[in-house]
Length: 254
Ligand SMILES: Nc1ncnc2c1ncn2[C@@H]1O[C@H](COP(=O)(O)OP(=O)(O)OP(=O)(O)O)[C@@H](O)[C@H]1O
Ligand SMILES: [Mg+2]
Image (tube, rainbow, N blue to C red):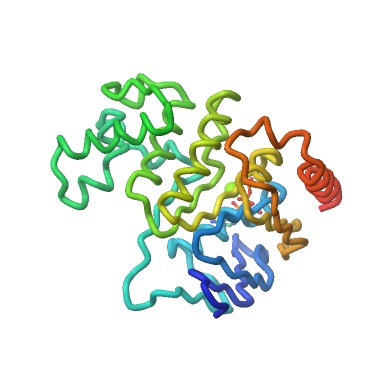
């Protein structure tokens, strides 16, 4: 295990069997996730990104290879925002109760739960009709429930699968800028799947590019942009443009 890593993957492979068809999805993936870093996983549809996140979160078994956690004596506290966020939202709970679910599970009382949710949304400069039920909310608002629920408890490891895909442009910018500061303030380690190149470069310390299946790591791009607080400040940066060109080139030839 590399020094300061929170998770080490060594030659992880995973296949699915459907009827007589055997499909290798992940082919010998070796990666280390260092503490307090932000990694984006980037790759084509069906390349195994969600599969990889599910393996890391312990939801899915892998076929071969090893996965080691740095603090094996205590279970890692993981926050997970699922790609299919609707299926994780409880229809009989109001927005506020859905976001605060991890606190309820820990036995925290309603007033404290509600205060924590409101403080988090204030910090991200987000207004959400908290007393509405999921069916009374828009798609983007439902995704906010799922995304903020993953962040709320400031987990050791935050895993988010396309957490902003239903956000409007401005919401996405505000969220991304605030997230960067929030992750750094709370010393969190983060793995994000995203198809948004600009967002990925702005947020990440590195971007791992996967190929089509059987998926291998095509390239790991380390990003040393001066971490700006504002997204608009980096758009003309030479390094930003260079990395963007690389990602566009890689995605046209997966
Ligand atoms: N439970 C399953 N059984 C069989 N095949 C599966 C299963 N889950 C995923 N697959 C297949 O594995 C491959 C990878 O799926 P995965 O959901 O990990 O891709 P992804 O990279 O997250 O794609 P996207 O960008 O579209 O979300 C796909 O070809 C998919 O059809
Ligand atoms: Mg996916």
